[in-house]
Length: 432
Image (cartoon, rainbow, N blue to C red; front, side, top):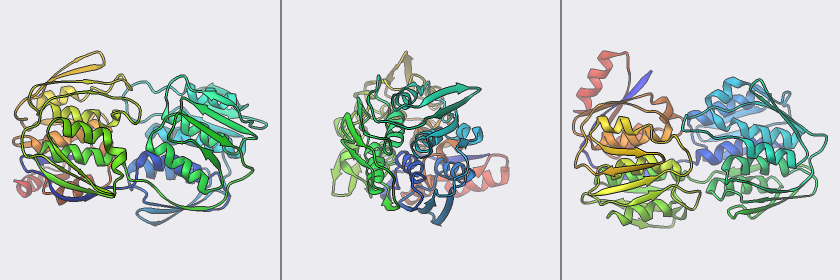
């Protein structure tokens, strides 16, 4: 097991290059097996979730060639199984995208019920509703979802709730269905658009991605493609908040500023400076920031995946802030960990009331999930003394070279083996 040791107190200064979007990549990788021709995907983030999904795809017979750390070639012509083992699903929720991809291509799929971060209920009833509307028979038995169809036929599907996962899975299943499919109340996140653009590059006919109505005209087959994944909005947002929290000055390169507008707006509102360029954003904070109210909403609202990070920043800001979580009901588990460091946060239902404090104190804390783990690292970068963040395997699920990128900005952070006392002492001396 590994942990981060952080010595707080240094502003982050410099430039950081943001990687490809993990959430887009997961949908795109699943879509890549829907053709028998070779697909090349660039700007792939080298993170645990991606590598687990590639292993799952190899496990059913897809040929995977890692050209380099960020480029992969995939050929799905020799897939011999439509059964995705629970071991993969247990590690990474988005393996369920293979359900839509396999159902769309082979008209059958068997995938275990998903796992991933424990941040609350994420039911897949809307996915199943979509598959049934396309003509599939779907059974859930002994932890497996079994979907089969003699043929898939386009239909008009209205999602009862806005669901990124269901939107992507229904797009995958319907792009080779007979006739037209309309998805209403569709999710609008940037990675929905990216998955649709990738499918279109393979010969699919999808219009309206990025709006709440997506129209899909079925095609007989898909072909090979070369595609580059969009930059990761959440990785960018995390570094933006880290720059603001440490009173730093950071230029984020390889971003799409429009995707970051909700985050930028909140940072400006509480007193940070945000400069936008064509494919870069600069965040500067020269003083202690102010308070605000934040409510998480589907895109283009404030992202739920940025809620722990912004709450950590507001816990250091002046005044009282309120953060309302409207997407997941179990996303405040990090609050107890922040309290160890001196944060004053009261959770009432889906709302956190935050009374800003001037400083955090270093402590031993544990990452309860991916984004909360990143938030605790931000807290450690600001705290007085040493902070130890364990359970960092959650953080590694979604952030590539996280500590290296922070080190390059001047942070005092090291990754160490929790059982190696000599290594821990050496790391503390190095960053003191």
